[in-house]
Image (tube, rainbow, N blue to C red; front, side, top):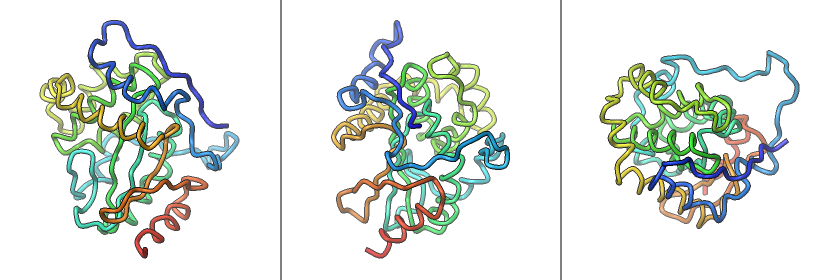
Length: 244
């Protein structure tokens, strides 16, 4: 079944950071709705269970690939895949584990496709804190690594799992300057970037996460709906974009 949540109330004392939540609230009333046609694997068969990312795993996936804040891949890539995600969304975690690695290895690493992370924070306060730190990590060239590690550490929705201790530990493991990360995450520039992502989602009427758009060159992005997170589904979408 699709994962559905109502928008959580702002956290007490979160102040101006609530702008991140408010910017997308008009459209993202039903949160974390997966692509309508998405087919999920059922049951508890261990053979089909996704593998949890371990420390250092993100380096193996993203090592050597150019990063520019929210962008991953060659600036010369003719196609961009835009990913709307909420870091508390369990289906986004599923995509990060099951779908993203194949896309990175087959399309991003060879320079065919560039990825753009468009983070949203509509499930609640933990989403917001995670997003601001992930956006801040972009200034140190490790947005994608921190995103990967936060999905691997994902806890229950709004149970306070996005702690300073967790962020500091992961930062150390990834070689991030945590003092700078924390300062940047609390700054106006990061807030503006996060709000720009929420505004784009509102303008595109993104109904939930994960949600995908493809952009060919400088053309207007168009929505795509893979039937599953299997690489075969994205191969069809991306190959079509590369030949258009």
